[in-house]
Image 1 (cartoon, helix red, strand yellow):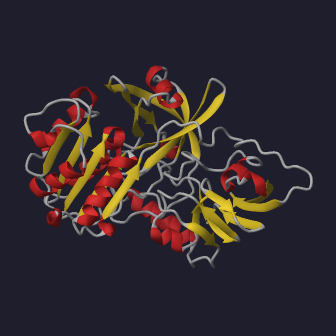
Image 2 (cartoon, helix red, strand yellow; image 1 turned 180 degrees about the vertical axis):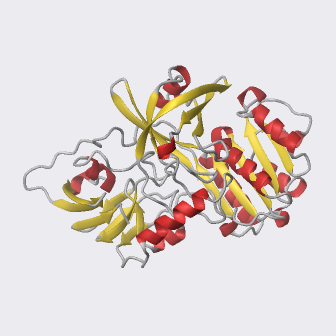
Image 3 (cartoon, one colour; image 1 turned 30 degrees about the horizontal axis):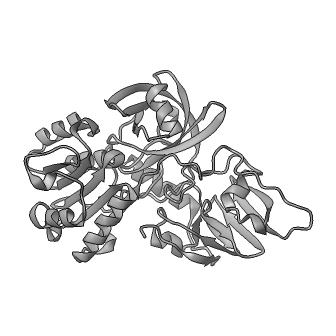
Length: 404
């Protein structure tokens, strides 16, 4: 499984670090240049701010690019590295919805852009494609994400991206960055879609190829449209991907791999690269989520009733310097996030599926079972961080800290 099923996790002593020093390092990394600094920033506490939609631009029949104006006073909050994402919050038909979308343009002051593809049955994505317009105001969380590593020193490096559908969004920003920051860096992109009509950023990719003809290798794979090259026609399966590694992209020439798309493609690519002896530390992946009915929605979490005399777990959490507590019935087996939302509506979360990492916190006391983890890096796990949307208490008392 691509998800890291952690089983039981017990709190350990926090790693020593200076909060002020970490904040300074973050600010320095974000502001070094318009195409990314030389250091990947440590995560910071993300917050929602209301931003105005500057433009909604059609990309395909089922996808739009949404650009937000960022006022000068929030410029530092919305500085980002290519590969990061933002969570967007909107109330649609009386229901609060939150979704995470990758930033699809190279960093620039004054605006941020995301691409939203309509998902079958997706409430948020359908609304964004059909109703959202310039002048609307939405709550947008400051950027987060670690899908940025391996870009510190680019001279002579070969970076490869493998994407499907809307998985192209973070790779657009990454490709721009790699090619702009170094005259000797190369970027190869394998991008799969059903047909030409479904290719997001088709013109922008062509323009990028024209700008960097010798350093950008662009391979469009269409599953329902015949291309001249058989290798670029049909669905990418294990055999086709293996042939691509033999004929188009030789793993021994690649320094860093970035994978983004649905679970099946990302897992296939990870397995194939592992079989080709590519070290896991050089393979980064990001999954995109779709609208499903089993996620935490709204600002109050899933309703849970505590019956008199029923065994409960004491959950305590620190957020913005304020400590809150809630009793959770053992029988409910609810996540820490759901329990926390029942007493505080400002608890951070976005996907609630273990993918984005917005709800991360450090486990200070007690033990939990974290069912899925697509977001936390091994070093974060070592430092005691958990995804509260996936963490279920296993001890009588659990304490987490969102502020660390």
